[in-house]
Image (tube, rainbow, N blue to C red; front, side, top):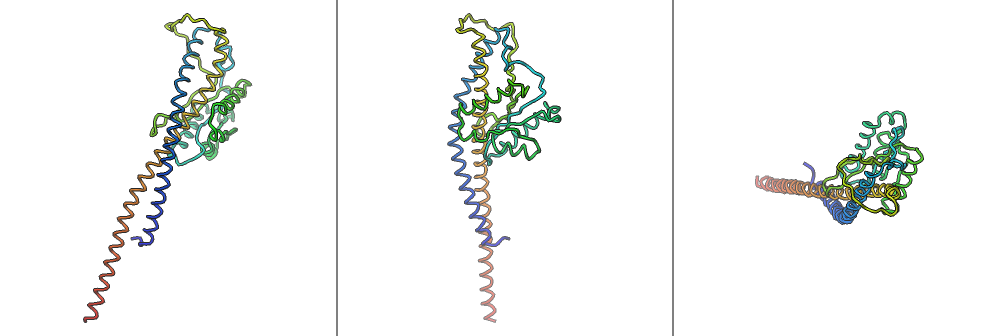
Length: 292
């Protein structure tokens, strides 16, 4: 059995750890509320924008005239991995990195083997996970989390769109964590470019709207805006999911520290009782020896 001093040291260490994890849990809970509000506000706008784009594109014959909607054979592919800059959030970063690698090996294995698949990382931990597994990262935007605004995200989205427009890449995939609640994050993959336009169906409703300017002009303006909103929504989803994962991880760590503290306290009391009993036996034995 460990000595009393060693057990006291471990108890003090576990108490300190519990204070840290409890504080981190409260900080993450506060940040989660703000991040959750942000993603809940952007989702209806993104969905409505996509609905308008779908409605307009269904009534146009030359929607594929846009460079962002032209399908290509994916000879050169870019996978954008959205992770986090900090750890202590359970399997948040590890799971999403595995998802990106799984996508690369399943859907783009030939491009990966020929060196025609690149990774862009948003988040230091995701970048570290990929490099640790031997994958090359051609670009990173880890500083984006310092100020996660639509303007900063739009700049990166515009650079990716420009690379696609210049045919540097034939397909761009987004891999990120979708926020459901504090305990549930879903690893998602979305084709960012080219934009997949819905197939025309015969039962689509025809609304007699007057468009000013023309439908063609509106849809050409909507596609780049929709892409930037989609990219921004993915970042907000991942940001909220990160705080949820960290809050859950810190909650579990705090509970584990409390359980361990109880076990150590019981162990300390037993060791202390054994030491006292031993001292009493020594005193009694000494007294009996004097009598004899």
